[in-house]
Image 1: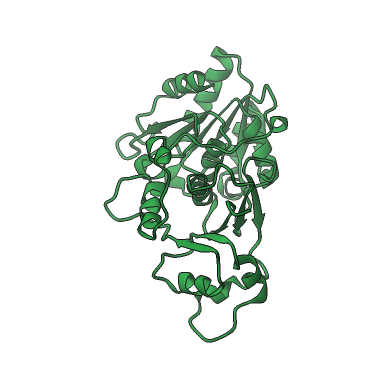
Image 2 (image 1 turned 180 degrees about the horizontal axis):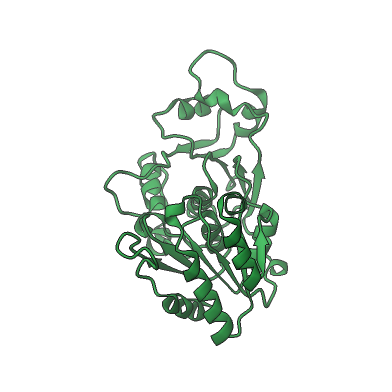
Length: 310
């Protein structure tokens, strides 16, 4: 369809989700049947959502050709994917070889942005990206500027199973971004005791490989623990949850994208730039340097936010 977009992306899960949030704000996204995605990051099966997110692995496409500057011919498979498509390129800005080479493949339209935040700029990263796109002539609808954080994917009812409980993800790719595990456990205990909520924790491959075994054992002794779910399992878990609590990490952004009520805990990173976007999100900004044991974020306040959202 003419309103469909092709997204080229090279980052991790959190950045990828925010790029999808950007795409949902582009002209025609509300009526698009598909957002096609080329990315190494697998965010699970979102093909049944509205719009449908259909991911293709870059393996075998010859994506490396985009970063070259010689006279070698373009890869046939890559040319076939890009030709005639409306392309949103997150692999580099409009002044890069990637943009120039993509233009050689005859897309119907091509807009590129540098995904890195600008030094000293505190606007949300998607707003920084929109500024780059508008400089290339892509006008974002005014309603997006007025309600920038309210959009989510349309999730089918079969994924919205009742009684999914509260899901907590205490991990993150960077250790400095992890609110202390005892704080997460205190939130879970209060929710279980005061609100009679079903609770489960989820940890990814990074936590499985790097966390001390005794920490994981302590967690598993007290709460149901989902260990290193597949991308498809993670989507199912998050979409069915009554609410989600997590750090500045990929699963937190994914939960918000799915429309799950989400409480996000920020410490060293700026929520002004990196907060998750979605229709039901609450952010806590802490100060790890001033108070490492709880970042000046009270578990009772997080519990209150969960109950207000869910």
